[in-house]
Image 1 (tube, rainbow, N blue to C red):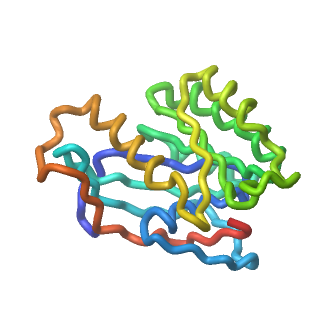
Image 2: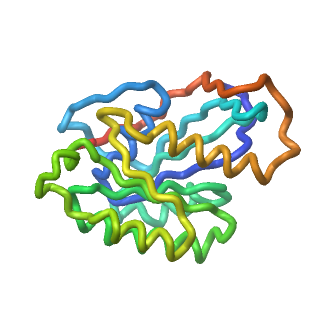
Length: 203
């Protein structure tokens, strides 16, 4: 999508190895790479996707940021001006959920107009009711309610709820941007650009 104007900026934030890159890859390309040796994203990777929802068109720019704490200052550059933030945590790692509060506070302080969406990853690992689940959905829902955020439990392996997440983000944005040009009716998604420098581990 070289040269396409980006209508809205969406940024992914969260602790490293929560599966942010796998989430983007699944959404853009319907692909899942079960390679536990993937390296963590360095800096950030960018992708763009054209979407048409309910007759309205937009190009969503997606920034997949590094989760390592040493890149936190750099992440502020990437979420500057974002209209939506997907704050990710790993359902099998309680510490990643504890880290969500940091990112929410950062966004509230620096990007007050940015809508926040909580995204729990690796749902496929806890669907059998195993003890691997370390974040109770009620705890996450209660926290999301505190700042009126939407919560999605997702799986990059199965694709569960990932399209719904990005659809909701675009729908919310378009609902407040009625001046965007009309396009064909219905829902159509195409023209994905692959993220650059985007690798993850344990998606």
